Length: 204
Image 1 (cartoon, rainbow, N blue to C red):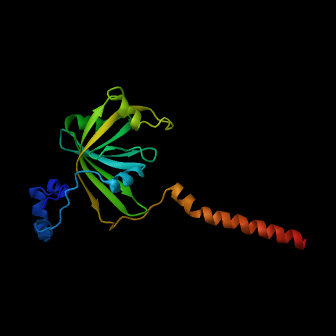
Image 2 (tube, one colour):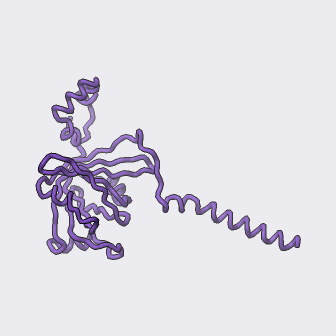
Image 3 (tube, rainbow, N blue to C red):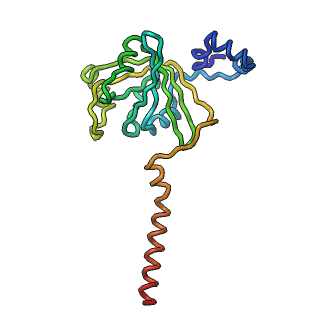
């Protein structure tokens, strides 16, 4: 049965490492069909909720580079069931990922949901576009309310994806997550303070 992501990941050296550690039979005898090569509603919803992701590239000299990309929630757009795209905003102007993709367009993306301990990993090909190369795509990915300068668009064409298990993902929460969680407590505290103030006024 095809496995999609692992068909790419399981190179001969990886197979050798699995054999050394005694896990090769797990994957050689895997009975399921997990050829995840099109985004479903599950992936679309997950991607739309992300405000950051990690993207890996490789240089001409073979060195890997992992870059964190962040922006407004949902800035990584699902264009269709095989394509993602995002606006690349100006940062420290090193352009390491941009240069790497010009030499090798293969990429691996990791999308994390720390509160729910979920992780989506994606193998893809990355194409750089100027802001004027595809106006409709540019309009789709640029957030006019986000205070940063867009320099280019990256179109990310899916090869395969897979979901990781939640083991070893430590839950972490954003400031917005914490504020939402404590909002009922704040409301209850305000109510109790108001009741106490009323009682003090009656007793005084």
